[in-house]
Image (cartoon, rainbow, N blue to C red; front, side, top):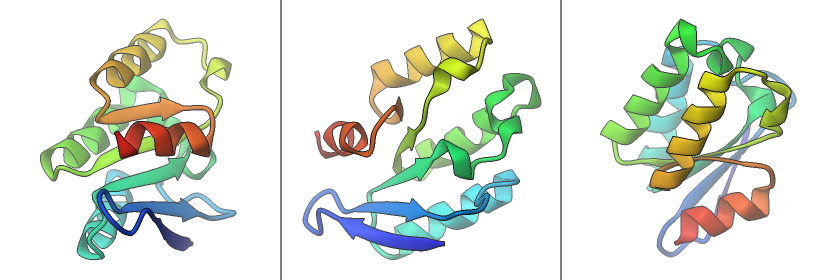
Amino acid sequence: MEISFINENNPKIALLESETLLINTTDDAFDIMINCRYQDADAVILYAKNIHPLFFDLRTGMAGEILQKFTTYGVRLAIVGHFEQYESKSLTDFIYESNKRKFINFVSTTDEALKVLIQ
């Protein structure tokens, strides 16, 4: 896993890149968030390809638990990916509602992620 920091001023955004899954469990997500927060990041950009597919099945509760931790600790999040592949209406609604609040964001490009997190 490589963590680079963008916008060293305010907010400081951690961009995580990896060729492997980074988040297999809620504990993995918590560890990543705490690591980024420890390095003074206010926000995190993750790629959907680095998150276990169970995250996108809302019935597992994984997404809700992870996003609640980010919210509780005040770390904004952008997940970059193509979410049209998921046919779940619940997930589509979840993404829509999350994006409206602008704290947890599901976007299709890194540039979009930066725009929404820098606001």
